[in-house]
Amino acid sequence: GLKEQIILDSQNLIIVTSYLDTFGWPAAFDVGFTGQRAVGMTIQHAPLPIQEKYYPSLVKAYKRDSLLFETVAMLEDRINMRRKRYQYYGSQIVYYRGKPTFYPIYNVDSADVRRKKLNNRMLTLNEYIGIFKSDFKLTEYKSILPKLIDSFKVSNAPGLHFEIK
Image (cartoon, rainbow, N blue to C red; front, top):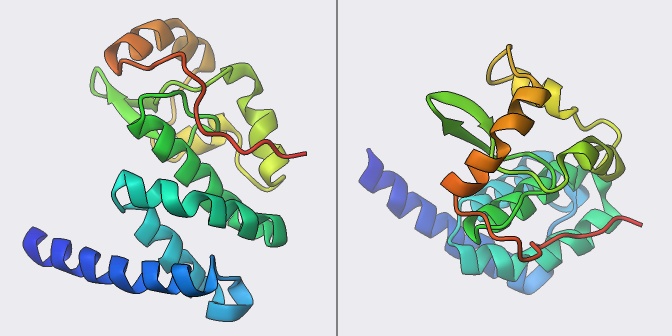
């Protein structure tokens, strides 16, 4: 049940953070792809201060291993969402009027460019939202964006963002 999951999550977090404090973010060749994903998922679901603490370590690892692109995009977007800032990659989906849509995205017209810069295998916004529902229209999203910003109380203060050179 939920209680067991909470206990398991906190135990996993102790293991993962002690690993990160000792060795930094793992490369796939150190812990395997599955191990690397497990570390990423544990931090994705951790409390905000822990996410923020290990984000720089993840960015450093991404510079060595670009296959961490999804982990970078998701962690950055999650931190920004929790801080009520815009997301940059559109990885965070919210429900608005019963339908899945993107949590407000900073400069939505250049989001696909940012996604491709992070890794050219990254799905476009339309492809990504298609996983959740098929009738998504970017024009419709733009028309409800002011309502989403208001509804989620998104601040105009700059969010956390790693700029790829």
